[in-house]
Image (tube, rainbow over all chains, first blue to last red; front, top):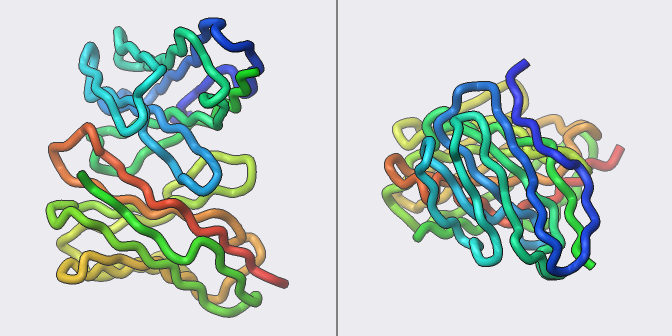
Amino acid sequence: EAQVTQNPRYLITVTGKKLTVTCSQNMNHEYMSWYRQDPGLGLRQIYYSMNVEVTDKGDVPEGYKVSRKEKRNFPLILESPSPNQTSLYFCASSLRGVDGYTFGSGTRLTVV
Amino acid sequence: GENVEQHPSTLSVQEGDSAVIKCTYSDSASNYFPWYKQELGKRPQLIIDIRSNVGEKKDQRIAVTLNKTAKHFSLHITETQPEDSAVYFCAASKRGTGRRALTFGSGTRLQVQP
């Protein structure tokens, strides 16, 4: 089944404790992207990747890191999480970046 | 960069009525306009999309229209059903700009009253 898999689905952590949210797709998509969703703000792009080893900032990159060492994986790293990073995070992938994106199930992160 | 505005933020209709959600975009070079539906607690899912070389597209009860001159596009849902209740997002993108591959509107919460 074609899908984008995110883990974990739920995560509660403390301020400053590094964490990684994993994302994997099995559709051989070139484009992958991370979004955060906050009430009233819609979906805001954090980082995106056009292919292996090619990443760039989206609209709200501060406090986040990404890597794209393999085509299928695009982890999101929070080196020192803060409470303002409490949000619902979605990974998404697209074949060419300007067509339909497939979203993962989301990761609800709470930083206390 | 691209800016997408979406209205209304909430919409309540009676079952069987039509619902219309409107979006405007700022970048005249944008050429791809998808719509996503997000049910409560679930991921956004693509329901329909339109490219700039087409003015209208239909899929059963859902249709999207695009006015390139005015830089706005709309989602039309006819004969609404309770299962249409969700948050709907419009988005815009243009070829060759991976950074802003998709810029989303802020969403419309549609409530269909039985």
